Length: 264
Image 1: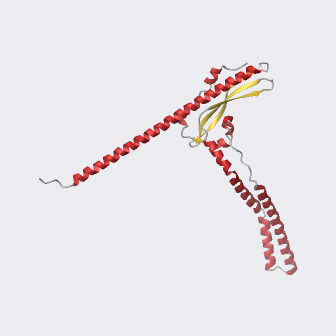
Image 2: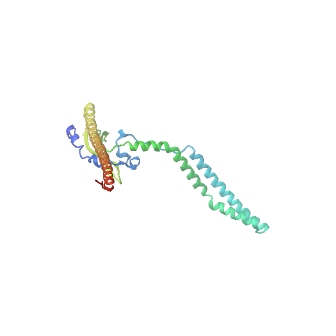
Image 3: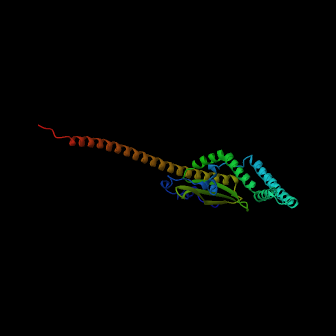
């Protein structure tokens, strides 16, 4: 078996950012899309959106109107030309020709109208899912997680991989996660299954302990920050009250000083 003892696995899980640097940051939108695979499976995944059930009918109607408009336009233009040749080019014939040509030129507009309508239907249909996905995203807190997975290799050996999912600042006041395989253990196919399973469980427990420690550190930092904010607010309120009392007293003294002196 190639690998490190469990104590060194925990040591390898150091290197987190100071939680203070992440307190005021919010989860970045890319965690819903491009960076989703950077998250551990334990956090779950956002719900997938789907087209509105009415989309197909709307698109089909748009296609039908496109065809009808094209055929009608061609017929009107042809009728205007034929009638103009037979009876002379009058107002009616010119009108039919112009309307027909306009219909032919703009028949694809129905496709765009149908697509815009379908997009609106999709947006309304997926609005509840989008709201739940946003709540899921906002529930992600910026502390490190560690996960463990196994993989069977071509030669029959089994690899135990410890993966770190660490929060990293991005953009303006947001954070995402960086995924990094920090340890790999190779167990030959000849090793007893019970030994490999026991080692995998041992590594998993170490990862869970490291995750719990990271979460505790983040929560302690957040609690200290909230306490400092409340203390600062209380101090500001106390100072404001003292200032208000001092201003009232000063005004009373000034009023007295403006009065004419007493005569003896």
